[in-house]
Image 1 (cartoon, rainbow, N blue to C red):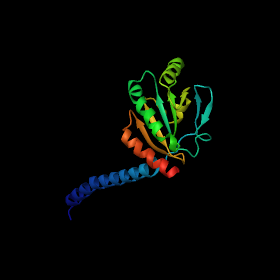
Image 2 (tube, rainbow, N blue to C red; image 1 turned 90 degrees about the vertical axis):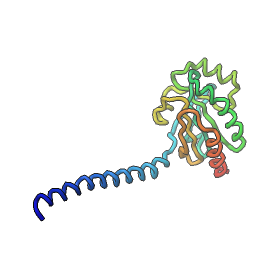
Image 3 (cartoon, rainbow, N blue to C red; image 1 turned 30 degrees about the horizontal axis):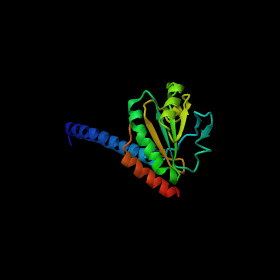
Image 4 (tube, one colour; image 1 turned 120 degrees about the horizontal axis):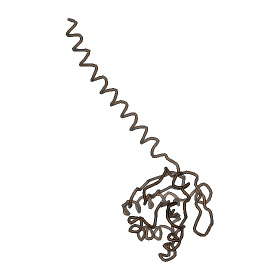
Length: 179
């Protein structure tokens, strides 16, 4: 084989080798993401409710299925979804669902308190000092809702308004296994 033919063959193999290596790396990354990404545990966080009471994910919510909903009174989508969040909570609370609506640190406490009282929010409402949002992956967009199972595993993170039919199915399954 001449030197020119050998160089051409080597060059032809070289890009193919890089493409194959990139493909293998992509498959490994995707496998790792799905293997470990779905295993994320809820952080050990403490929420301060409007009443001043503190509740903890590691003590008070341990062994329970619960939602943590980061929201703000200035968030249009939060206000739009809140009646459906109330319906979801009322639908599943008899089966053990817990719910903590966490107002963002930039929300005025008097607005949050007023909203919670005038809407008769049936679940726990907390004011965040910024630490809970940070512990849950530095939440900045509202609404952001986490669905957490009885083992403390985050089943789903919704950024924006959830698809409530999907949320209901997820809660039904999680609460069914929690019985």
